[in-house]
Image (cartoon, helix red, strand yellow):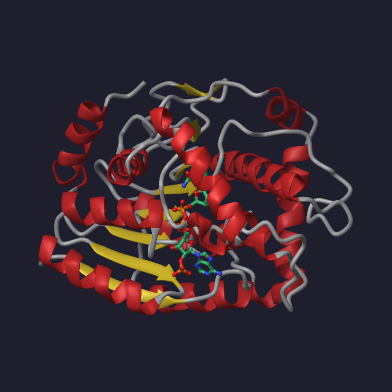
Length: 341
Ligand SMILES: NC(=O)c1ccc[n+]([C@@H]2O[C@H](COP(=O)([O-])OP(=O)(O)OC[C@H]3O[C@@H](n4cnc5c(N)ncnc54)[C@H](OP(=O)(O)O)[C@@H]3O)[C@@H](O)[C@H]2O)c1
């Protein structure tokens, strides 16, 4: 377990390590874990720029007002976007790309606790699977040039993608129906989002050696994730939260822990620009893979049977190819980022 003292100590040294002017994009930064991580980012950095992507403008404006008071040197912007739609993801990225040529931290935590069944957007994808997987990967592919630029600066540099879902929960997939057109259930939706995220991030870490990738399980954190629940489910979840109290992680602590995941040199890319290997420690049983699966206490999961199998038998590449095929089908090949491998 990584102690909170270690986390806070590391976070207080971010500017010393990486300098001022870091750029963070927080998709799902208007509430919960994304919000608390964005607040920790502003508290612990100098002259940084943060972009909060979400739908709730009023909430975002209040947050921005408060965050500016915490650190008047920082610049915080709200980008209104419904990221269940890939076209809105593309629009949001374009707005940020007009202002930034590098992105140091891409923090992905848009989510919903909805218990609805398959709920298709006009792009033909399920909303929940999109929020938890496809949209997040679309942000990654769109921002590859900016992440690569951040990772290729000389000296200690930071280029990292963090996705908050449920690392450690990877399981076998319906490989003939990855987007769950016919095998939809809430359990399958969770399993596919979690596993495809880990597999794809591991694949991307192999393809883009200067960017590191972290998939985190936050543990039990009291947020607004229950806002789409009906009254009965809300009561049931509230009762479960009482039982789970001994394991609960306070929202502020979760933000600091996720800022640590986003900045600690414990999670280096495969290779630094100067050619030095980033393999400070083995991750996922693959030394120096540049991909890390984190538990709620900041420990790394070292191996997973299904991930090992998908890595060895080529399924990992097929899952990434499926993801690019979905992007091409929904957005057209001309909208694809030429940097994508
Ligand atoms: N909290 C936990 O205990 C826990 C445990 C395990 C996993 N997780 C995972 O962690 C992630 C973050 O959850 P959280 O607890 O921080 O939840 P939260 O407080 O509900 O925050 C979710 C964020 O997602 C954004 N979002 C939702 N739908 C969106 C949409 N259509 N377009 C754009 N943004 C959207 C929300 O912004 P707007 O409202 O502004 O749209 C909000 O900023 C989720 O994927 C969740 O499954 C959480």
